[in-house]
Image (cartoon, rainbow, N blue to C red; front, side, top):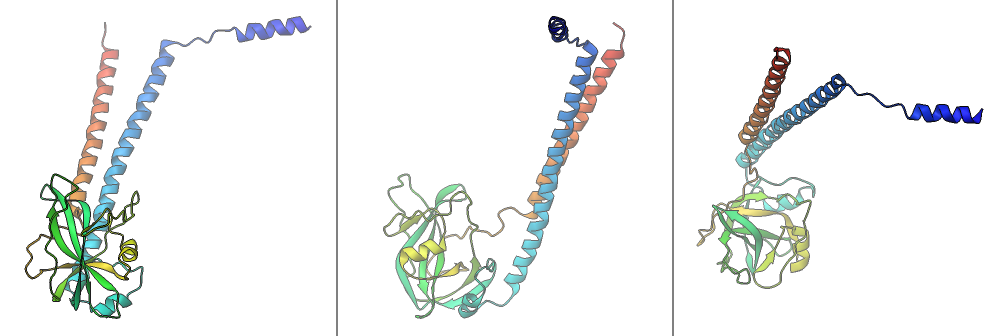
Length: 264
């Protein structure tokens, strides 16, 4: 009995699996269909994502326009706003009562194809309030990173008027990574760590002045680097690629069917 059962098992396991050309063709068609649907879905999803980003940018641009047209904030009102408030785009008007000679250079900035730094300086508005970081503007870097560029700092207290901004945190690297000296070279605009470094509290936003007396440095930073129209253009590109891919796969399918039906 055991021998018979063993023989049956051996015979069953040795039965060859017959795969016909028709089965192979069916599996190939299924594979191509799955790949076609997957690629098409990814392209369409990328287009929809760009449209969503365009809508977000349009709403943000409308909010920035409202803030720009509103009356400038006073310094006391700025400091009284909730800590988690988005302050970018609000306008601020102050009288700098004193200036700190310490300069700060934000590394790896690009303007008009030139690589350099955004220069900053700390000013005081009143003796009892946190200090304010003011953007002096873009300065190009030299060929030798060991040599930092010369920046003309604010020399005397003066009235300043401009817009506020808060740079988005880099999820990969948000640490200050300061190199001591004057100027201090930093890798990220982390106001919390910078306040600890200079041993003085700082306001939660940076002032980008409309103009600085005696300075002609450009102020390239913008709150919206890509407009809603740019995202809409990218969405159109993704949708066009999806349509072109679908047409191509349909054309190849038709050609293959014609070749199969044509007599040899």
